[in-house]
Length: 142
Image (cartoon, rainbow, N blue to C red; front, side):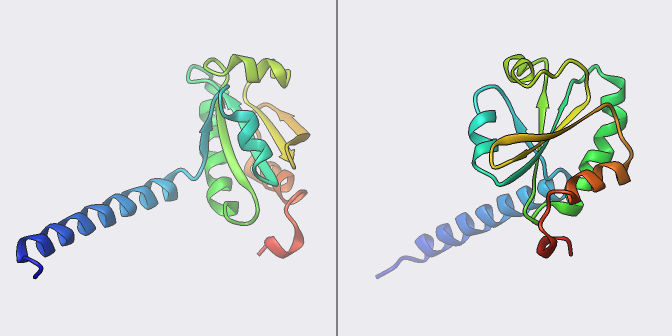
């Protein structure tokens, strides 16, 4: 026979898990990007067909201007066959060096794990959207 306290305990655990999932979904709605570092960068870009990555740093003023633009475009196009990621070039200096990131912000586009496009500097929303749409398949434009 199942005890009432066991059922109550299960219900409490379910409510806790549901609350955590809701918190994760709210966080994702605010920032759908993935933070990458030296340890996981290569694996991540090779694991997704289309990845748009911005190299940035906390102290960088143009990065601060560009970040809300990058996040807005990421919110709009995430789930349409493109994944957005951010790399702190100070913390992931090996990765920044491997991809010759000399100035920040730098936005790189990877298709099937290979870099195919790069834009240096903060850009306007329509420029970033044009870059993304260049690689998103037509069926995913909607």
